[in-house]
Length: 219
Image (tube, rainbow, N blue to C red):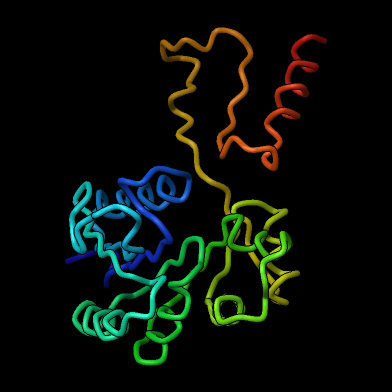
């Protein structure tokens, strides 16, 4: 029997083989569940490239649907999928257009919702994006309907609470495999080093981080 019970569905704005932080985090999560013997399925956007609508990546089933367009096939297909699989939980990573479909499914099926805000999905409204539209309303409802709401940093957790008028958003930081930095293993890290990851853009502040690290090392 499956120790993890029914299937976990991961709804993500983008997924492998596209590259990026969202794709990395969600694929690591999905593949770990699969490797531990759990049932998992990824549901994502069709993407800009000609990916197959249904495929397997590292053993994980991946379903690609046109969330960004008003195609009538999306809701009936998901209803059939949930009817036969009866997922125990739905994990929404970087909530965007798929938010409304998760909320619709919640009306017909019983499952837990865990939503993770990850940056632009919230900050976009501080950068001038309109809030008087369907997308914002569905995100707002998702933030209040979810059983748990997380964010990838304490700062972002506060922004989620502020923007969507909700409480108890939990910071859950992106994981790092610390074993690769184990001092007892042969590795090239002989001198003080700095580890950070993220998009190379001004808003991420990598220039400030490098300057601060240089000041610490040169003391």
